[in-house]
Image 1 (cartoon, rainbow, N blue to C red):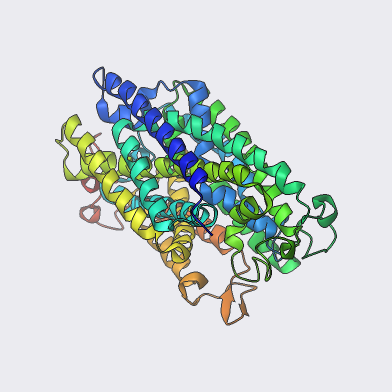
Image 2 (cartoon, rainbow, N blue to C red):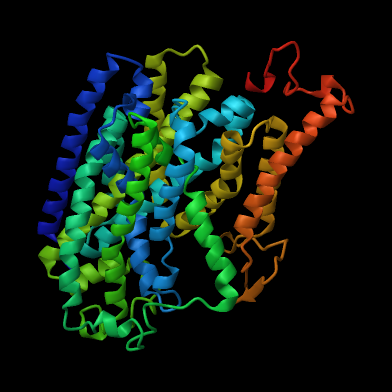
Length: 528
């Protein structure tokens, strides 16, 4: 296959437009920097983000390359199907739940990052510990979606995936570095429009291809493979529920989410943006679902791809670019590639800004250099963007293992960070001791449950744990169980510590974090 010159030209034009918009938005950013807090402007856009822009950027953040590629793949897989496509509904409900319960206490107190209430309640020492899971998650997320773009370009343009990864990472890092949230938000608008138009244009051509059977018929009838609707076997119900709750609740404690709602001009607008973006992300999954259904309804022997089928070759992760390339005209598949590129950039810039914001604001300013000036914090944020962007691009070259690490880091955020955030916002009087105990206990429980992708055998065999092809599979909803135990540990140890110190069962001098108030003062050595 020769280099696709028209496709390469179209992609270069798209990147140039995105970069131009990012640079234009950075000028607005610099104008606002002269009128106020420069680092806060970069992180939350001076809290005056336009409602439409805020809605678009909140939606585009979740609709990444992994989102549209993964949705199509799950629908296509004979062992999965539509009933296992949980991300669209899970993300949508997550944004609604976040808007109804989490946005108001965060936005009304004018927090800058998600870590602010955690450091305020538990101190900087614990805050720095809690910073690790979302930092790793953001970097791995950036790397995973870069890897998906590289694989797509390799199929459609026949260029090196490495080259695509490097160019995309440099472009995203450059305009994010220049304008912060303004550049990210304004480029998200054009990227969201491009994703919508490009994918919907591809769908009719894929549906009407002569090699494709009617998806209405193959939804319930086995033609070339099992029906694409799929089934959930009884023994897998616990795992299905666990994954679903993980998506709904575990998608809340991320800076990429709170960065959007904290930039809104009021708590009411923030709640509205959160809830409506949930609907938007759900609707954006429809083209991917249809593409996955088309792939499951296609006689691949009638295409130039031939046999064996993608699933038999172990290439199911590439099913969306395969459908675009083999079932659509060339000029249409190029548009589909643009959709994938736009989806990647809309999420990649969010992950990059999220990680650098938390590092500069919560670690550098509050722990490493408390006397740092605004300009110094801003430059540290830019430096960290370059470092994190470079790290993500390097990790993206190891696409197979990076997805596994991304999922694992996401699980750690769910079982460790979500309970902590719930406690600081909704449960009064939890303290540093409870937070530390909950973190360590939850982390230990998650490791003892094992991780097949990293070849870590489980020490704890929950009910339903079974050996499949030499690998132990946990069918019990252990992630949610671990999250609830972490929550219970934080509350129990917090109140127990207060009881023991107040009753002098433990000497007050052992209270190194000063959770017991004396003389109406509340020193917090753990925050120093």
